[in-house]
Length: 416
Image (cartoon, rainbow, N blue to C red; front, side, top):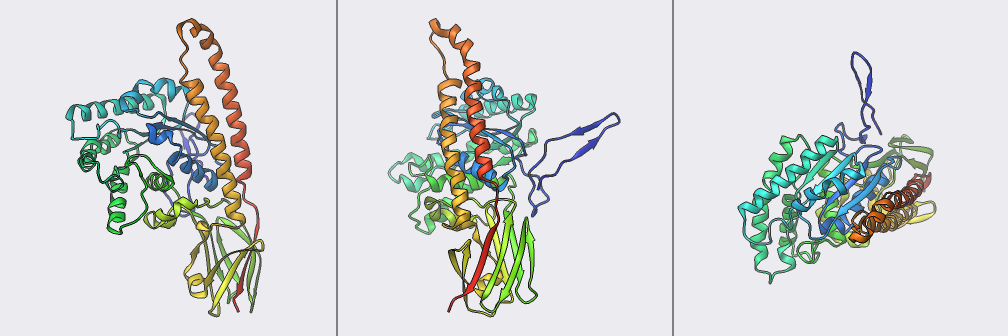
């Protein structure tokens, strides 16, 4: 649901950007409808994992969000580099929303360096000042904790893990100074990895201790989105089989039929659940099984016990006991069926589009011609940027078209 706030002045009505707000929350989400979003950071950002998963969430959860996504991550970069390129790589893109995630390289991968820490905060503040002056909303994010367990023979990792804590600590105060949201990703990811170590988990979200795989990308995206007050509920349906009544949230329910063999109904949602990827499965217990980010609920009370098969559009997607259904189940983590297939196609289209986003950034935005070609490059660069962005926008429109929800037939049948 989108809310538009109107502020009256003595002279005129002033419209502000429309925040994306969930039916299950009264708090404003950081990202807004129509946002032009830049993800700024180092190689972890340039991996296009956590940023693409955030984009996937925003696209499926808000299929009419009309957002644009630009990744400005550069491998090996620091806050000093980010501040130096802020005008060319961020402000030139005319963003409305920006995430800043530097600090992994700034700390030096060893003991605490006070001068490096001072420079890190000064350069981060320089970016915040520039963003504020340009009217860009910013979310400040500390890097993930290094995964010591992934590289047990690297003796400097335990030292750097403690350095990180001290190095990033001033970010919270800096965010408060500029009245912007801060996500303490270091604290969250360290807590998760401590729990995984205690569980002797075989999953390593940061396999080289720093960079992500699919599990690590999801851990980062989950941490950032939840930290920015992302809505949890995609949609929800509660059915009273005894009273033959349905209570839908962010969806509609029609043609409800209750018989001795089971229940059937047609459901049309306002959004799609994210498609849970195979390499996300191992990290799900450590991200609340996405209940706080990807809850696509079904609750049925009044059933006569036993087990039931669930089919969507004639395709069986799961089996649930009457007791479990009465408590409510999250269908957001389904690995098959028409809902998964549609949102998976959205994800594939996002991935393909982001290849072009990356090529535009590396091949055009970052391109610096030799002196003898400088004048020609300067003349041609704006047209090339425009042409590639038009291609990206065309693909983005196709993605939003694919993300539009459709009605589905749900059937719960008694297992005999």
